[in-house]
Image (cartoon, rainbow, N blue to C red; front, side):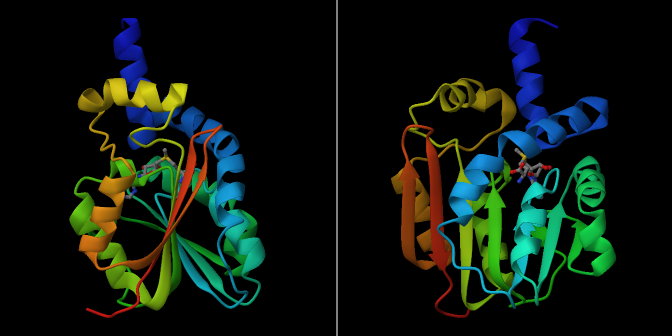
Length: 218
Ligand SMILES: C[S@@+](CC[C@H](N)C(=O)[O-])C[C@H]1O[C@@H](n2cnc3c(N)ncnc32)[C@H](O)[C@@H]1O
């Protein structure tokens, strides 16, 4: 494999981890995404009774962080990669036994959850991989309670001035990554029905957080 093909393979393992390389990537992401996740969740109000969904839960570190905070609630994880589901289950075995975390295999395109189930939906470093952002955002909207919040945390978006963002931009056509700038995200969420946007940026690291509220039901 040449360098370009290797880089492209590494990036697509982040899209859908599989096999031994996928397991390595998931372990690495659990550690590499921890700081941006802590930064992002620091801007979100999380009540102890909340029911929360983490979409694209990967290696499951975010599920554990959320489970610590919802002492009277529950955290669900969903991911379309079997490898991610298995890794999330391994890293959250204590919470699974307690019944505070539940992890399901499924895609954001058709979430295996009832309408209006969640107070908060989080998505960390994943939404740029979703296959149809406008309809996938509406699918997330469906499972949010009225007044609930969608929180998207990312370190890669169009216009971020970091090495990682530039690398992803370069390989986007090969890997199928959808990179939008700030205005593109605003349009996307508004079209899906969200309102009351809040955006937080940490420019040195290229981190960004979008908080959207579901203020009206369909
Ligand atoms: C870059 S990893 C991020 C994982 C984790 N959120 C983190 O911060 O470390 C992206 C994850 O999103 C998942 N994913 C991508 N597209 C998805 C989809 N359409 N439905 C559900 N999960 C998806 C991948 O399988 C992968 O586990």
